Image (cartoon, rainbow, N blue to C red; front, side):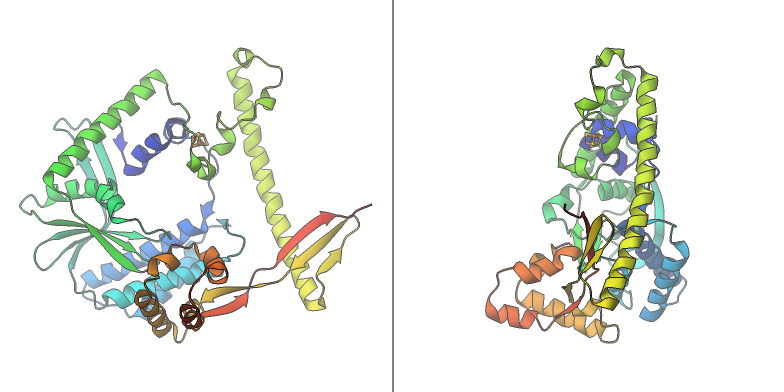
Length: 405
Ligand code: SF4
């Protein structure tokens, strides 16, 4: 019987076909590292090192933590870092990770709220006595509070902060609690702790023995469904809004346009032919990716040329390139290195005082600017808000269109 993880179970629940692509066929889509994933990797590893040294009796200064993060960012960086957001640069994300670590450091220094007992702890949970149904995962940090409560810490580097209901229903950390209970059978107080580093804010939830037993029962049931789907080779597609983020979108039967089957009866299409189509699409995607990289590099050079010559249109033989320069608002603390910390505190205090924390931080970093420009707020709030933001130059947008006539 396979060992399941929280993400494996969630993938099946979201879409059985996606599960088949990923875990049964192990479809190689030549995954590119996203900049968000890379930021998460560097932040997690930096916090890991911070606590590792703390366990050995050394407290890092904030500067040491940040310089470790900077070093990691340069050393571990993959050849290709995929940035979906056109407005943000790698430097923006790198700075964002630094801000997360600074925020965390200010909240918890000198880190004496609890005693860390394990980092990146691998937990394998037997859901039944025979060990037929197993779930595994990694706990970011396991700690014991002075009153003996066992805490399971999880770091989140994404933008969205989940509400309490979501946290109270979360399966992943509850699995870890089952594992932690096996390590400390005599303890009865456990806390699940999420650190939303972008805010920064901490959220806590607890589980009763009854909650955990219900989780075990429902998970065994879900694993049985997955195993049955394998036996029957029954992994139907489940189209939802999440398809837009699915990495198998181009290969998914639910998404292949009917015109690609032109005049053919589906029964007559051989499996080999379909495999050939899929392979060809994979080649095309790779080629498109290379072309897109070349396009981005050329656009950057055109923008530099236009800026230094004061042009907003540059003509080619058959097409024109229009270059749009602009500005965007960002919170001051993401730019002002020297006064960053006090500026961050002032900004957060201001948002708390005006009850706007959720409103502002629910925005993706790329749309913070839209919030500032479009939101309708009262004049007093606006005046004070503008003391905490600054305008910086946006990455130029270059649009190439065919000449008319
Ligand atoms: S594109 Fe949608 S339906 Fe297709 S595999 Fe992905 S999640 Fe499932």
